[in-house]
Length: 151
Image 1 (cartoon, rainbow, N blue to C red):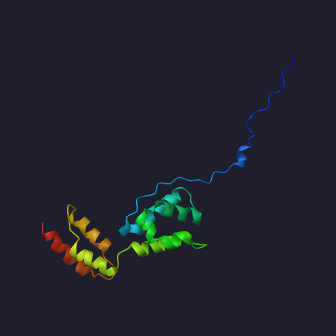
Image 2 (cartoon, rainbow, N blue to C red):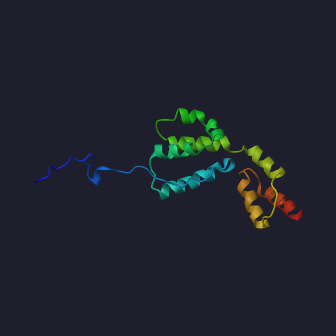
Image 3 (spheres, rainbow, N blue to C red):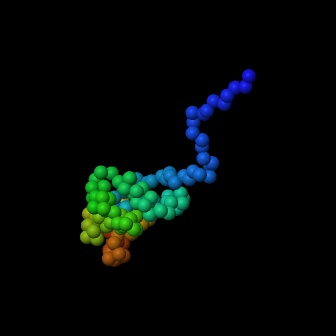
């Protein structure tokens, strides 16, 4: 007796070449609002490593990583994104909106920056990193000398 072929309950699968994978996993660093330009540099490094080139993919990675406070700050760009250059727009706006003004940065240098447990050379590098282009190097040197001598 010959058995009849039982029809499979699973649909026939197309060949493997039919499927394409468009999802990429990257490690997104934690956003530091006062270092948003640095955050974007790290994020762009992750995009390069994962070969992420699509503008929309980059844009959605950024907005998915914003906590509620920063998403609210960017609500206009998130809810009404431009049709092109979305990533560059959110990058520019986030950096602009979260960065301290030049006046605030100078005030922070004068009032709040302490040497802490850093070596003098580390502290000087820190001051230079936080100084705006308008801060003269002799002002930074005086600030650095005064803070180092308070040890």
